[in-house]
Every structure is written in C-alpha cells, then in structure tokens.
Image 1 (cartoon, rainbow, N blue to C red):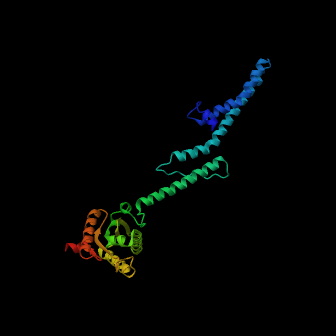
Image 2 (tube, rainbow, N blue to C red):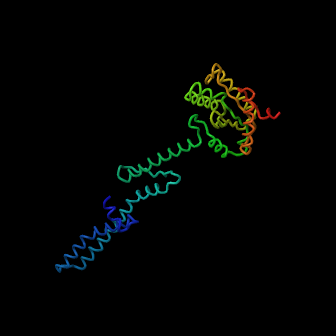
Image 3 (spheres, helix red, strand yellow):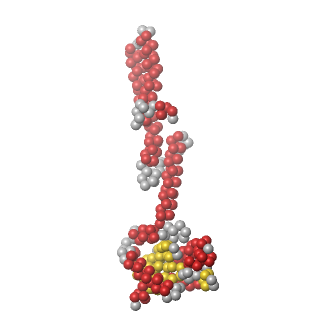
Length: 285
C-alpha cells in the first residue's frame, strides 16, 4: 500500500504505467551499474553492452506484458463493481484456487449475491404490506399495470372489518394485528391464485377477482363470511367479528370509478347494519 501511494505521483491515473516504470527502473539498475563500471574502468565492450541492453529491454517488455495479463482479473472485478447499475453487481466467472485473484472474484460474487438478495427484499417490501404479507396499494397497481386490459377485467370488492376499533380498544393492538393477519390469510387462501388481494388501508382490504362476475365474487365472499362465523377470528363482546363488503364490475382502465362504486356499496353495507355484502348495482336501484 505504501509503494502504491508513494508512486502515485508518477502516473496518477494509470496503475499499469506505474508498474511499467517500476519494472523498467528495477530491471535496468543492474545494466546501468554495469555500464557505469565498464566505462570508468575502460572495460566497456560495446557489442556486449548492446546485447545486454537489448536483452534487458526485451525482458522488461515480457515482464510488463505478464503483469498486465495477471492484472486482467482485477480489471474485470473492478469493472463489475464500477459498472453496477441500479445497485446490482454483475457476477464474474468463478476462479479455481485460493490466490489473490480467486479470492477477489469470490468476494465480488458474494457481494453480487448479497446485493441481489437485498434488491429482491426491497422490491418485495415496496409492494407488500409488512403486517399481513399481502400486496399493498402500490403492489396491486403494479400487478395490474403489467397485465393487458383483457386480463384485468373482472370484479372488485372492498372489504372492511366491522367494529375493528373495538378489537384494538378492548383486546389490544397485538390482538388487532393478529386478526388482520388471520383475515388476510383467509382472503388469500380462499380466492383463486389468479385473483389479487391487497391491504388497502387500516382494516380495509381490496380483492380483484380477475375474469369473474360480481355474482361469482359475492359467492366467494359469502363463503369467507360463513367461515369466519364458524371459526371466529375474535369476539367483540359476545359477538364474533364480521366484515362488510361492497362489490362492482371493474377493469384496470375503469379502476378509479370502480373504486368509487365499491366504496359507496361498502358504505351502504355499513349503514344497513354491517355484516353484509352489497353490489354497487343494489344501491343504485
């Protein structure tokens, strides 16, 4: 490290040229000493001196070329680190052995693996709700954005836990968190794998039933309501916890309007006494 720093003034932007300079000086010191001694003692043999000089220069070229070649793995590793885009490091070929280059490549690959895993984790966290593990708003919209219009046509439901504030107030926030987690598992475990479940905010969830009718969506929600009546997630007083829901037909293109219709249906379900599922068509009739 000291020689690296001490020699930086020679060629500050090129380690290769500094190596050349060090090799040149190191290999030519004996030649310079020999020529000086021969000249001062009048024993200089010009043909011999020329041969030795040429041989020394040739040896320097071979040495520097070999050093350049041996430095190639370091250059590859440095480029992999410097060219990392979006925080991702490109893995480099695995080298056998345990010398400096092999250890450097192994370190780069470990860094690449750790960085890739960190990026995957950050990506998951960006689109998932940390409490329940289902999608968040951003995640659901991203999933819909990558699908075609035909693939995002179906039914939408806004689902809200009834009297959930009482769960937190009477049973504690830990129980409230557990209830949300269990309810999210019931939702995600009952709908099809092609449907999308997201925590929309607080105790409200959104379910997008891809390619389904409102009647089919309501049928699934009724099965979920029956299940949590038979296997209550919690009790508020003596009553099992229930949910209300508003449903409507939807597509990605009409999502904002569909959300307004579903929210209006959910509000009306709450207004009519909760523990019910209403279609947006029902509140317009």
